Image 1: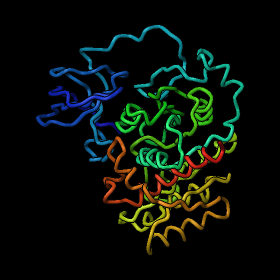
Image 2: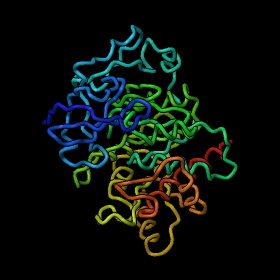
Image 3: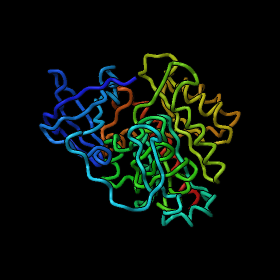
Length: 362
């Protein structure tokens, strides 16, 4: 189940909040490795590290790092005594104790103990982490969209558990495009930690004072080539949670004109499953107004969702320019903006629609 190796750190190549990228020599070869600073410390050149090389050996894309499990000769200091009894990555060797925004020791416990209403908060749901910057780019194009709008990102635990893995989230936070991040379920490393998606959404509204929330899984989704065996199908559950709590769900469709797999060409079958089967409550499902036969295919596929949802067609004027100006690189399944423009336009259209809801709601 796990491929264990010892290695020696050769270089520290990069770092961003919570993570350090290394080059480590393992059995005479150098591999790319990642250490989570808050879990194992920050390894230095020359130090021995214990690695989990499973994903790296399998040649996985997003998750294809060797992961530092420990720096045995330089253990990090014990954490300072303090509040926090919420354990995440529970009963794994790297389980971590954090302060949950909703637990009794939190300064926000009283607020969240009574909170059960999102008060119409627009919540954009998407099945892939790569949709996040595109959704935010679309938000910026909404007419009269307020410059001081606060957007919270809620990361669920379908992909990466540590939010620190996401360079995108860190860069969006630094650029001011996100007011804060919340990690829900077994995911951890956000500005706020929550036990469930429900309390994460309530914390977005009542703690971060967000005007809009975006919910996606972390990087590195899990798929099996089957209708139900895909971690992103849970975005349908995010629609349900949003409606239960009195929010306004906006469904971002996964659309592609470049994916060679027929089940993902046009509207992905995962979107049709998540919104057509898993989501039991109504949402605004956003369809980008794309030209030609491909655009017609997308509209026809999206129409299958009209039995439960409000399907909203959104013009894409100005969205490609907004996407190109995003403060982070855009990539999905190894394809950039030029290779799969339709994917990013669909996510940006959902963001644009959410921004319009803010204007409409005053």
